[in-house]
Amino acid sequence: MLAHFLEIDLLTIIQAAGWPIWPLLACSVVALALIIERLLSLRAHAIAPEGLLEQVMAASQNSIPTADVLLQLESHSVLGQIMSHGFKSLQHNHFIADADLRQSIETQGRQVAHSLDKRLTALATIASAAPLLGLLGTVIGMIDIFGSQTPGSSNPALLAQGISMALYNTAFGLIVAIPTLMFWRYFRARVDAFVMDLEVQAEHFARHLLQLRSRLR
Image (cartoon, rainbow, N blue to C red; front, side, top):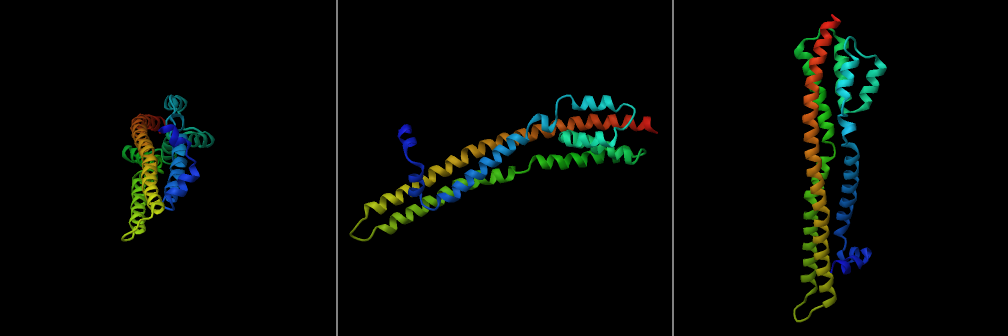
């Protein structure tokens, strides 16, 4: 049965499903683009590279890195952005209070954490909307079925067309929604793990900056 289904021409399916399948096709294309983009963006070396914190702390035991180094650090990774911002805060004011320095790092951390959530809302929306769009196609197909029937007569061709529209849209809505939902949950868990890791490393880095501040005075 599966082999027979795969042999069916895709264009024939689209034609049989009618116009309600076009929004679902658009959703599938957008969802695929979002999934690929998030797979490329949510990689460990782009968020919190292993060993970066230790390298930066070792290189800044007695002084704040130069502007060029801070620029490279900021473009290196998300964790690098947090550390670069912390160095700039200390560089701007060597007498910054403990609470202010920590608050500066936490604020930057919240901003980068928000950036990690980017596009996940759109992915979740598609996962929720796809079954509803499939249901809409099903309803439209059922309307066509009942509309094609007149008292005392029947039109088998229109009946078959309505049934095809109803079933194909339902199936395609689920085909789009299920993998999209699975990837959304995967990305959601991955972002939560990254945020937790960033919080821990940011706390270690804040302590390092406080020690560096005492040496700069």
